[in-house]
Image (cartoon, helix red, strand yellow):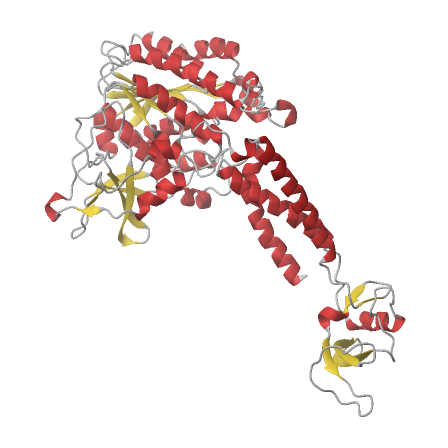
Length: 612
């Protein structure tokens, strides 16, 4: 459904504005449901590498763009608080480096963006440089001991101790400073601990606070995570790995409702974030996120926020935004380009009246802004000090520059009546029984799979040319596949045109090349097939002369292809299952989602067979 919606967006013709109306009015991002439905348009500038992006919303408005100086002016004297796991680590590092170039580096500062062991990142920026930096990592990170690292009991004790450093440290407040604090939060129950730490801070009590919450990915990671079956990396809260999908989503909803209830007080007028407000986001979208659990995780946040969102507690549907950004992910995380665009949304809500850049097109400059660039620049992390590609990408600057619309180019606006895109339906997974869940259909489906498998195995054996094989002591050679057939007259020895063998009394000459090992020349050898000569019309009749000829021919053995046929059969069934899994038309079995991985294998096999 999401793919169909994306296709509908790209095939709809936008309505151009008059030349004197190239700039649309700015969107009001301090609203309960932040508008995110629209279309990204790429404008080619001077070269292939020099391009800019325009995001046109169906609401008939556009986003203000914050260049680094605009972002500093917006956030000066404020405290930005982010609760989340690895994606929030990326947002924190990116924003820090926008305001203070090279302000954070995982390789230099000794932390890892893994969503497990980096528990607190706290930085203070003044005059374009970091004047305070405090990063806490779990001691378990030294041995990568993830199993049970974030049970509810351990998190309550450990995070309470670590987060208290925020208000215990001597960090003077100044209106010329910006503070950015990232509290670890894999699960919803981690967020209230962060809110308490902010409330208890006295030195920064005068600073306006904004809070961004992004929780969800580790509920998905925990689903069906079995430490006894190689799942130690995701078993940070093992009790969640034993839950069914319905029970896990119920737990996820319960936690979301509790946290949103706390945020309503924290972010309301008179609350700690009552001036700037807060934002709650969904998980971001990547191409491989096609299973039921991804959609349902997004839907829980959407449904909860629809009932509680206000101008001071804003709902940012990151799933919808990243679904529209024409950019790949980095191992399930946003690229610097995608994360920078996300910060434009956050900043627009924090500083709705701030002065922004004059340009309306977003141009990104840096060696690792795009995912494709990162895959090249960060292909080999050996000796770099980085553990993941996204850490390497964040180490290099990615500057957003706001450019004016080129002269003569009309700004496009999508009319509400022209584009009809129901993104709710695109991301919604209705509660219905799939085709496969019907018992009688499931029986027939498995019967079909078994019959197809048997037929494939049978074909791999039967559709294997054995007629006309001769064998010597070393291998096989095939006469039917390598010989040319010509007529032969025993009386005069002349050759005629190609014919079809005429039967037992007919005489057919088969010509095939023979290599003379001493002369290194190719000559023509003749084999008589008929009643008057030795024949190998049946596999049981294998002449010694034929075997000698095969040995002399230098023809490589045909070899048995049964294993290839079997593998092709299994691979084909897995590919079909992968397609059905992507369309939610088959049982939600994790391995079905990897059917696409056979594609390069088929290419490799084809090349091997062609040249073997």
